[in-house]
Image 1 (cartoon, rainbow, N blue to C red):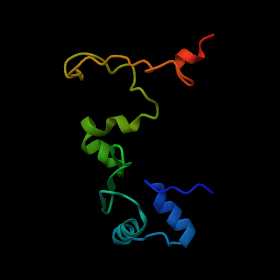
Image 2 (image 1 turned 135 degrees about the horizontal axis):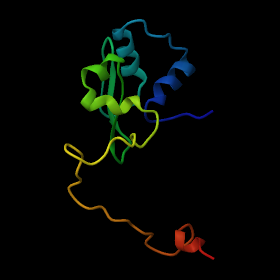
Image 3 (image 1 turned 180 degrees about the vertical axis):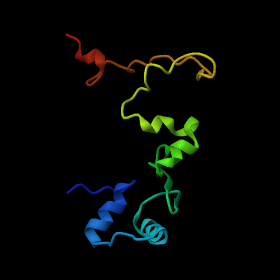
Length: 123
């Protein structure tokens, strides 16, 4: 069986392995997360949301569960969550208020021609 040591899966692994009961209140959920969810940051459990800040030893990351009305309360920040596919719909484009990157991003090529690089796969 797959067992995660990091991230959101740790609470589900613990629930399955230890037979943890489903929490009935936000306080019980907070206690279960505090005891069994592996994070290297903070977890906030409220009546209608769970927010977790952690990292994977390389980069910081966050995950969250929000109520449906959160998107209505802050559509400018959360509307992207309503789309199942990436990238955003084609109607989103350049114009007033569009994101402008602060620097041009180039394309990186493999550093060598060894096994596993694109150059090594050419006939």
